[in-house]
Amino acid sequence: MARDIAPLKRALDGATEGTQADIYTLLAKWNTSMENALEQSGDRFRDVFWEYLEDTIDLVDAAAVDGEPDWAFLQDCADAYPPAVGDHHCTVLIANVLGRCIIRTRIRHDVDAIPAWALDYLGHITWEDDKDAASEESGAFGWGIGHEEVAVADRTLARAEADDEFWASSVLTHAIFADAHAAIDLYERILQSPDTIEDLHHIEGMQRVLTRPFPDRPRYWEPTAELESPAPLSDDAREYLLRVLGENIHPKRLQRFDDQIEFDLERAATEYGDSDLL
Image 1: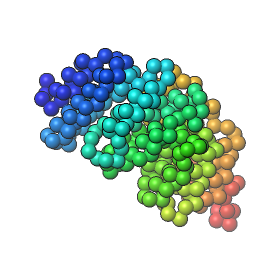
Image 2: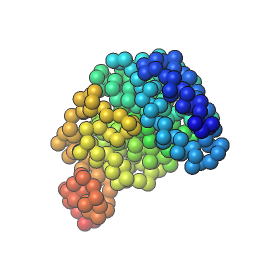
Image 3: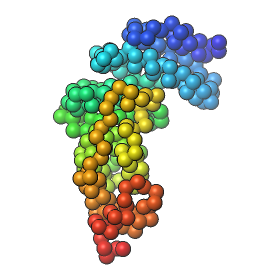
Image 4: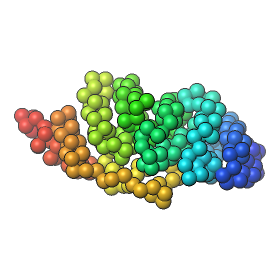
């Protein structure tokens, strides 16, 4: 056994599925082993990270959920390893399991049953401090759109305007599954902001709602095995999106990318765009 990952291997081998006490040890040993690997090289870190990520996440999820999420346990883990501090490697684990539990709760109950602190955790993750894998997981923040305590749409717009539009895209990818009209409202606000640049990049992720039952994240999870998928995108929502596209993006740009996007950009351009520009 390689010395750098020995603490993690022992914790994985010694953990009993569903036992929360073992997870506190596992998180600590994950962090130690990732730091050991990083001290050797970036390549070594990436190899170890991807080799053991799925098994570690599965154990955390099994301990966190017994029918319903144990939010108190998850909050203990989140408090021990907060996001956006850059001094540990556990954010990706917690973000993945929080994302699963947020989706479970939204679908089985309603948006306001999601604890505000859980959404806040995802909403504070940054690429700079938490790296790309955790940032990708944090898009599940979008399932909180419409929450009475957490201004998901406003915060997503603010980050888009602060040059974090790729994170906003990942949020939109999730939000359109949770509440299509609210997600399209947010998309329109992003398009109309003078402080944003991206336009069709956002729709690349949002179009997944047309062909898939759930977004691709959280990793290593098959939500259809335990949840009913959200209702398909309604005709009304689809038409609303075409109107937003047509009214906010140059019609010739829409026509140029029509064959690359599942939504009917040609119709958005001709029915809702400025005919003088065609």
